[in-house]
Image 1: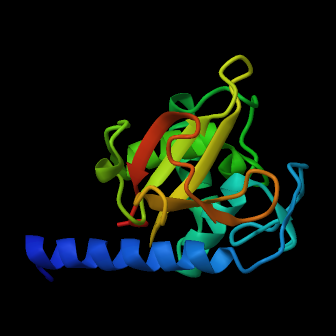
Image 2: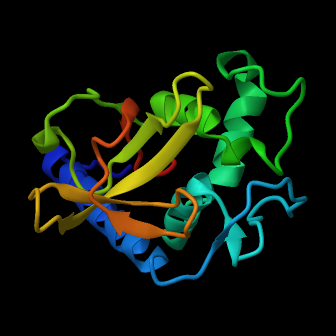
Length: 188
């Protein structure tokens, strides 16, 4: 039996989040057209075409670079705990369920850490996942990853996200209403 000390676990988590931040930044070097369309994909390990996607696909791809298949993880958790997830669709669909921000919010809250959604920049660290509501009248969810690059103007950590122009690294943490703040280190 292997015992991991609290310090070792903290170091592993810090390393994972640093690598997630780097993977998210790497995504900004890809050309991706914003396409929210439904696509049938393989399972597990499926992805929409690499030149297309939405905000959630950038989070999925950053985690996949670290060997974490959110398609599989979300699908398996939804299968086991379907009642915990919003009723977007009457049945499971491994092609799209993991690409929905509301499902990722439930998944990260169930399998990761739910952190305070505050208006204080110092509460957000590289590797954190943040969700927003872009339009409260229509409930338009958005998701991004806090990265270890600071904005020269505000000094805040920047966000890698795709809001329509492909993956970008921008100082947008407080541009919209924050609806969630999470840390997820992958399956235990």
